[in-house]
Amino acid sequence: MANQNKEKPAILIIDMVKYNFDESNNIPITPLARKITAPINKAIGVFRREGWPVVFSTDSFHEEDFIFTGRMKPHSLEGTEGAEVTDELDYQEAKDYWLPKPRFSAFFKTGLEEWLRERNVTLCAVAGIATHFCVLTTVMDAICHDFKAVFLEDCITSFSESVHKQTLDLYQRNPLYPLMRVASSSDLITELLQDK
Image (cartoon, rainbow, N blue to C red; front, side, top):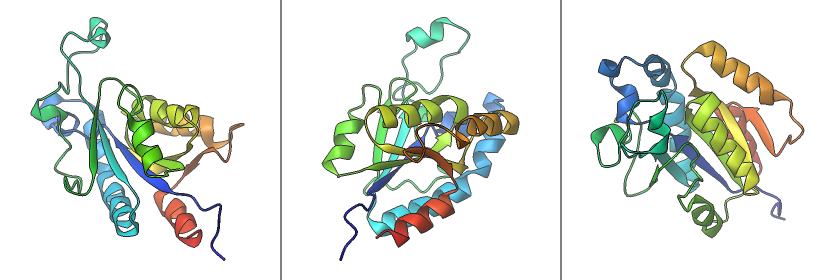
């Protein structure tokens, strides 16, 4: 008998855009972002093979946006090359969903909730950058929209290893477990495949 409680996962890959991979921008997250491309690509391959949705959600800002009235400088502007998915990831336009986002969470004013519901998704596996910012807000919003959420610890990073680790340490043990949790991509995929 089929498992009636099996998960229907989607992988959400956050802000892996050309701006963040451009060495000339001299941002500290670039070399760390490069380190997570291989595990993300491996996870993408499994998700595609299994017919599970692959979503690339990327910054798509406007120069006059409120967020740029503070210290943050305009970047990843809508329609520019810097806001496109990095060539270092296995993004396939015909198979994957590219979802530009106007703020930090992949759920904010993007229609992502409805898109996931149409595909009967129950669990969001979140990859990309940055662990303490856009990954975190996406995980939190997934929970707020009644999806289970997993920080894919080997597929996310911050501008420093210590900030990445400190953020994950906060959520290793949390009152929402197992609805929100931290796991490696290989452990989650093994679990999902066993659950089929």
